[in-house]
Amino acid sequence: MCAGASDDATLQAIQDGLNQPQMLTSMPMNGYLWVSVLYDDGTIQKFVDEQYGPDVVIVQSALRPAS
Image 1 (cartoon, rainbow, N blue to C red):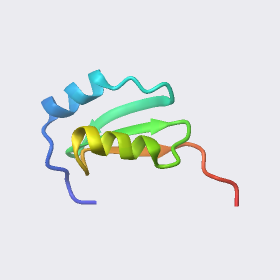
Image 2: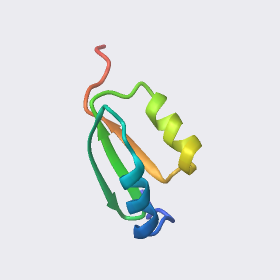
Image 3: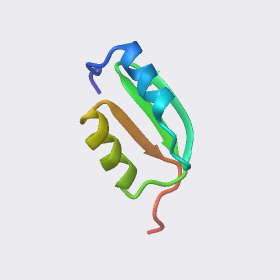
């Protein structure tokens, strides 16, 4: 993945403003805000994309659907 376009100050402000009950950790890195959540079916990623734009916040789900 290429470096993101967001600067550290912007990512820190987003991180400070996020208050997701499922959020486990978050860390600005390489131009993105990486957020780990317990489970995301795509709803959280869609929300942050609508709020902050695509490719700013990357949501990673700890749990995956059973196959």
